[in-house]
Image 1 (cartoon, rainbow, N blue to C red):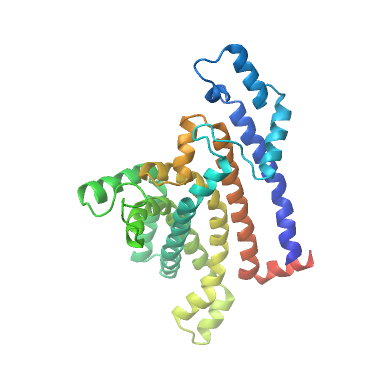
Image 2: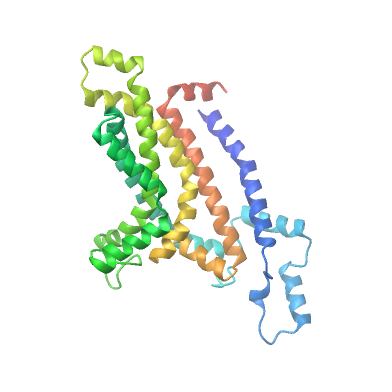
Length: 319
């Protein structure tokens, strides 16, 4: 088990290095001068060039990348040029709001998709299966930005059921108020995930129901509910574990649009502001964070595999 985890960690290290390289290159090659945000109106060209030299922007590109990567490895993502705050400090301030939104979205997606997918697979070809399949196709096709706007118009502006933006109401510090603000962002983040998860769970349920162990359980007189949730469920979790791990990074990137749309004070709103203000350090910091979250998500998925499928644990123990 330990050897298996170590091998997976070693596998992900080169991926992080490649992502850091591309992250730095994309931002460095972007139009504009990264030192422009430090320039004051009364600064002369000579002073400006001296400032760029002090900041290291006149050094060769490999030297700049090496210096940036060394700082990142020590937890220093530099200074945010727009807020004049350390990028790491800003990320730590905004991260809880984004993690809470992501966690709620994942839990909601799993809680809805697993029972719906299993029941649709069990009733393959029936009315319920067709209804679930129809809505899953619709959910996959809906653009998240458009869906978010429709929710705001309907639930906030027309019906006045939910607040349209923000994380809390001013002067109100209750869980109910926080939950009310989170409903629409969570729905927007979850709609496509639920649709995809349902399709995978349905497909895996249909496959598992034709396996010998299920036929043997039926022959022994086991009930349908017992077969589905005691035997089939465990084997249906493998593709879901994969999808959740792969979608961790997309939840962070998807939060950019959703948080900005709903005014949720997380990394998404901060990242969008950094893009508009060309805050290069903040952009690179949030990009690296998205990659780290994706890698950690896949690593956690690999570890969960060993509990869902003992054959993987045996293979890892023998590696």
